[in-house]
Length: 151
Image 1 (cartoon, rainbow, N blue to C red):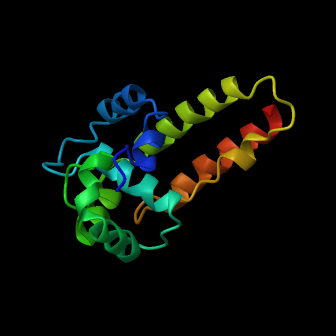
Image 2: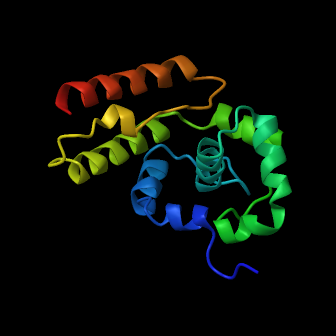
């Protein structure tokens, strides 16, 4: 029987949580959320990205199948499709855009001396949003253009 930490939890150790919470506070992301915080939403979306989930129904089904392990992965709230949809619709997309810029800056520092890497290959964004998809897409495309021109 496995007794160590989950791989997902180990990957999350690399995420600058303090910077994420700074972005959330800047745009008051947890203002309306009672039980499902921005960090819970980030964990769901990160899990979906890493496991190639393609829809809210797919994310919900996969997370419910792993219900006993969610707490150890860092997710404290139960996840429903409607909860994810509401969070994606109501939370300010600038939280995710600012946090993406933090991650890009961090990756630039890590790979500054390595000529063989292109940051656009490292970061492949698939953002889930119902309200601000075009705006988020423009932000990500601008980030990619910055990566291509400076990388």
